[in-house]
Each structure stands twice: as structure tokens, then as C-alpha cells.
Amino acid sequence: MDDIVAHAFETERKNVATAVTCYMKEYGTTEEVATEALWNMVENAWTDINKEYLTMTSIPSSLIVHVINLSRMMETMFREIDGYTDSTILEKHISMLVEKPITF
Image (cartoon, rainbow, N blue to C red):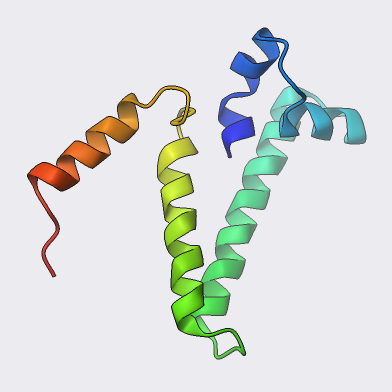
């Protein structure tokens, strides 16, 4: 997800190839088609993760919960902006948790 939202920024900086660039070169598509295809891959990965969690598998559910939580964190960091480079959105989420903790 990071490469999808940060593609323009990374291309501008002449940084290493992003997933969007690699997809465009491999399949000969436009940036829009590559971006849409990569977001579809993200959605399919969510489907796979949820399916594994909801069905009985040989993988312990305690391990799957860690994978789901990591995926949630990545979704929060990279869905709209590159949360690693521009951490303002993360600061907002973290401060909300500190100021208004979630009770169980």
C-alpha cells in the first residue's frame, strides 16, 4: 500500500522503483490501471486474511490475530497517505488512543 499512495512522491524523488512502476512495466499498463490492480490485490489479501481467521485451519488463531493487527496498522498508515513519511495522520490516531483509550 505504501508504494501505491507514495508513487508520485517516490517518482519525483527519483527513488527506487515502486510497485506501481514495476506493474506498469511488467504488464504495459497506465498508472491508473496499475494502481487499480494493486488496490484489488490489497482487497483480495484482506479477503484471504479474513477467510483464514473465520475458518478452521492448521494455523493457530493467536498467530492469525497478530497478522490481522499488523494488516490493520498498515491499512491505517498507508490507505490515504504515506503515513511513514508524513506521520501527521499517525500522530492523530495515536493521540486519540492516549487521550481517549478504548475500554474493553
